[in-house]
Amino acid sequence: MTGKIVKGIAGFYYVNTEDKRTFECKAKGSFRTKKLKPLVGDDCEIEIIDEEKLTGNITEIFPRHSTMIRPACANVDQALVIFSVKSPDPNFNLLDRFLIYMESEDVPCIICFNKDDLDAEFNTEEIKKAYEDAGFSVLFISARDKKGIDDVKNILDKKTTVVAGPSGVGKSTLINLLAEKEVMETGGLMKKIERGKQTTRHAELMPIWDGTFIMDTPGFTSLEVFGADKNGLCSFYHEFDKASDECRFSDCIHVNEPGCRVKELVGDGTISKLRYENYLNLYKELSGMRETYKKG
Image (cartoon, rainbow, N blue to C red; front, side, top):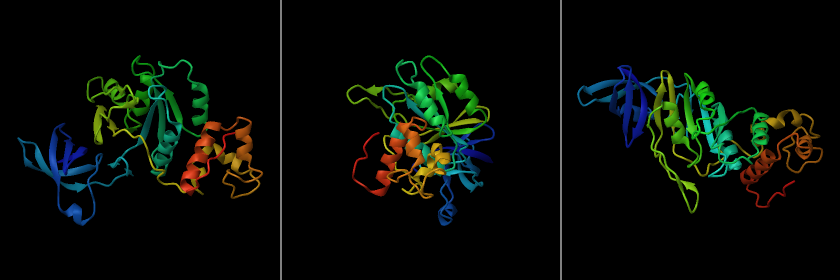
């Protein structure tokens, strides 16, 4: 029987089969010999051990079209990275880390800002332009007011989407709204430190409607800059691409070099200052430098 792994906990894998049942399975020892670990999202074949108790063994993992390290999962089509407009305030440096990681894994990424109802002063157009200029689709929604939910549904339709973002931004609330039922525990913000309660402790694949899956993941408060080194970091900032061709030096990394067209365009507002400052901070981190770059 074939199916899809929807959850893995402590060596047990839960496989949704084509007849809509879920079997608790162990992986055959041969996978260890092959150094192949089953992942959430894997399409697989199972042998049934007990029909009534719904137990079995995974006997084959079918070829994957994508894999991710964090969260460990397979066959993801895209990522929906969710931050909130307020409570907690968005951490744009962390957002850029997510985007760099997803691109290094070759996973297309959509940015979604939730809680759009909480801050009328939030500079929506500036942020939207900054990230759309970098090549990303950007949504502003309110799960509480059900604003923009149809736009999210259209993006998710017939795809497997990993949902990522820091704790407290409303991922579980949004997933429940999309599924039109309570499938995820929701958590509020701890008042003193405004850090989201962690409600998701493992990656889990959930069918939302026919052919459409969402993978919720543990919330992140930090993320290493996977897949990038200091000299290649600028390749992840696509709003720099055209300007880079006009820099005085062909190997310009847009930090201290004279005649840098990227810095000129940051200065006149054509390239987002916010994004450029994130780039400098990440470059400093990757290069191990300690000095603080001056803003402006």
